[in-house]
Length: 221
Image 1 (cartoon, rainbow, N blue to C red):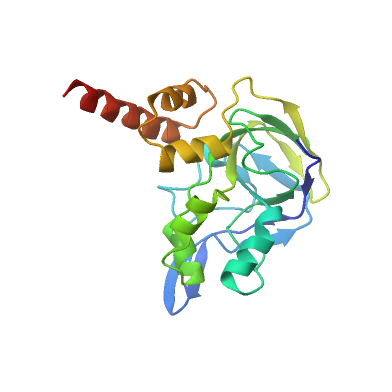
Image 2: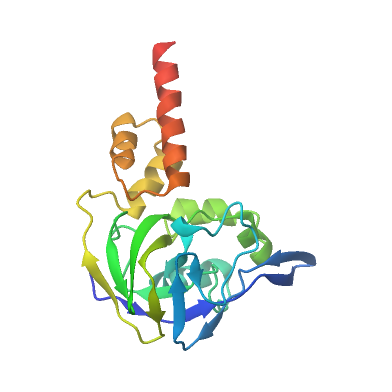
């Protein structure tokens, strides 16, 4: 795993935004701050989400995205990206989906955090960029980002270290979990391997349990 650096620290509370003539309430338009910012169980102080059904909660306290992907998306969109283009709290360099394991523990400032699941692209991204194809584009590219849960609360600044503290014993990367959920949904062995990861978020565990249940039903019919 390469050396990881935090490129910016972004927060923002939900508010009305107008994208391509459509008004929505969202927290996706986060702005850079220097800190120090308290990081609690549910995320950064002063940060929030508009869609509590699909975002937020202890398993999705912090959204991380690889800044190494930004040139790719600028080429896709044909324009420069805004700050936190995917609503991420932490754009980082030197850390990609095929390197990060679910269950990896990091030291983030004075806090301790753990990788819980891939980031699932949502309809708000499609609205923000006026691209109905943004969800499949993100999923097919594998450039999803990922979420962190907070194991120990602390304080984070733009210059804080983001250092691997404990490598997950199971080798289930963000990229692997994405591939099985979205492209290889009948791979029983892989589904069972993902479910063995205790650090997997509750919502993704439900998805993989459902996949396994469907395979069991189809296999018995």
